[in-house]
Image (cartoon, rainbow, N blue to C red):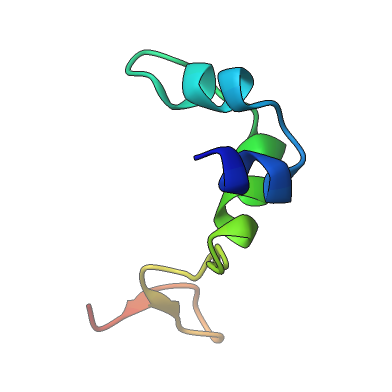
Length: 59
């Protein structure tokens, strides 16, 4: 945990507090921790949109 905190650029105690149940960590903290773990967060649409009418295609 200390190594992850160091790589993420946050204090160890701060990291523990961010990861406790009920905590509301900042998005930047989550992204830094994920990067320190070698993980990338990606967003993608749940459904493809039909370019002609805006309706969803399949699911």
